[in-house]
Amino acid sequence: MIDIAIQGLVKAFEQDINILDGLTFNITSGERVGILGKNGAGKTTLFRIMTGEVRQDAGTLMLAPGKRMGLISQIPVYPAGCTVEDVLRSAHVRIFALESRLSELSAKMARSGSETLMREYDEAAADFERLGGYNAEVERNRVANGLEIGEAMRAQLFSELSGGEKTRVNLARLILEDTDILLLDEPTNHLDLRATEWLEEYLRRFRGTVLVVSHDRYFLDRVVSRIIEIRDGKAEFYSGNYSFYIAEKQRRYEEQLKKYEKERKELKRLDEAARRLYRWGTGNEKLMKRSFAIRTRMARVEKTDRPKAERAMQVKFARREFSGDEVLIIEGVEKSYGDRVLFSGLGLIVEGGERIALIGDNGTGKSTLIKLIMGEELPDTGILRRGPAVKTAYLPQLIRFDFPGRSLLDTLLYSEKCTPQAARDRLGSFRFSGEDVFKPVSALSGGEQSRLRLCMLMRGEVNFLIMDEPTNHLDIQSREWIEDALEDYHEALLFVSHDRYFVERFATRIWELDNGAITDFRGSFSEFREYKKRRNTLAQNGRSAGAPKEGPKKAYRGNPPAYREKQLQRAERDIEGLEDKLRALDALCEANASDFKKLMALDKEKAQLRAELDALYLKWEALSGSSEDLAGEGRESR
Image (tube, rainbow, N blue to C red; front, side, top):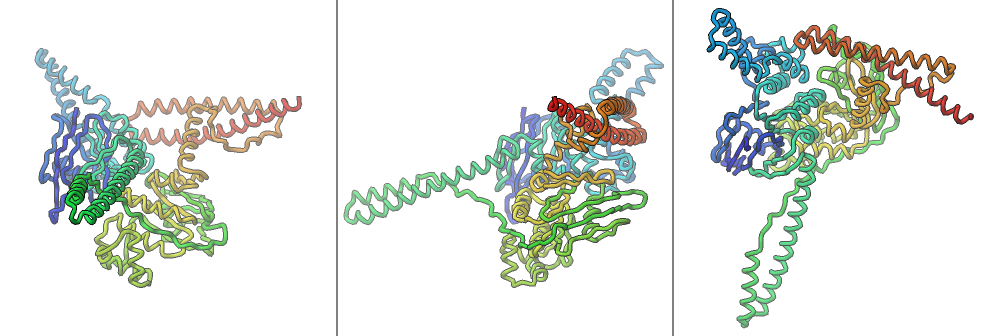
């Protein structure tokens, strides 16, 4: 069954240039489709047309009868005094209306045993159950917790939230509604890793249709099974996820280029033959006719357009010889805001050439730590010291220019103190060319401003580059340009990012900031995820064969075997006791799903138990390793 049918859609906004120019495609029920295209290709315009916010100039758009559609990027205006909890509850207005109707009918039935009333009550009760009325509160809590909309935020006025928080709340509301078609316009922009992964899991279980506009390549790989690229106002189709799209697009380009070159070669051969026959045919009617016949044949040869390859940015960081291993030293650093401690006792060393990803949930203090490193804020205690030969460059999350009224060219001239031609060459390498260089900086999009700032950063001999969400406002193509530039950068790199594709490509070390402490893991992002998965499995099942090899394996070698065996048995009993307590707490969490304060207290207690359990697992593993080593030595001695 087709949920969405679009035929010949045309839309122009200015100068009679069609953003959408005959766009045609169908979406079947239950499909997960990624909508791709350059910035300005018309992706958001398409969504606005589908929701009725904008009317098309030509073409038709048909939705399956009875299907309900919701758009994430469209933040409704709620009445004054409306809290976040009110917004979440608005998703269940039909349930509340039925609940009120059931109470009303119940009161009437107490006074009269009318068969009509009983029949009406049964019908309303069936609708209430079908809409999930009995589990509505539990579902609200589940979705809110998954998107990290805590009790404090739920009590806030919706109007006081930031743009990103409003997007998260609106996403939760749409998920709670009985929506058949979800339109997601950059849904992960304001989500941290945990919330993004929760959303991915939800979408895999969602039974409706999903259309996604996203620059998050990892998200697209995990969620969509089909790609529609809007190119020159028309649709190109790819039957797979983002990785398939990239490979297939390259294959199509190479195939079209081969076909184009083959046609050019054939046309050149025919043209030379026609010229020769024409020269030889002076006074020879037969040769002249053959020459004209070849020209006619040339006109009938299929003409394939030369495929366009995107021009890459020709960018490279300046080289700098760095002497000394220590780029940054952090010793005993603590930072608090009022009673809230972001982190304490931090002790870390960054060495030359390391690529470190600083990750963690929103609000854990990642950007604050970056500001401390940059000297924009001071720690409450501790020191942060950079090496004497370190030259730092910083790309902040929010790009600001001191003189936004200046043109791009003037901005670079003042920054670089170079010749106009050198400035234009550098801007051109970042795809700012022609009249674009005379635009004021204030007229640039967020992604273009990030690109201009990076262009300015690359002027110096940087050996410590710090980036805070460098890909946040960039389309996929711009992200790939920056990634290509960073591939040529071999000095120390520290970056905050929720872009898992970016983190996996560049990180050789992970700093995860959580509960005021940093987990320092040396390895790639995929290795770190596997490490955490093994730890979670170990915490749930105990004695896992895949447990991370941590702790001193031979810490107990000096003790007698009998003593070690008793210690091992005791550790196993303690582990079983803690696991029983955690299972009991899980049951209490389910029983108190609607009691926020109780849930928070239970979560805190569970976190303490898990910490104790982790320590016991490490102790058990060390004892087990010692026993195995001794057994091996016994076999060798025999």
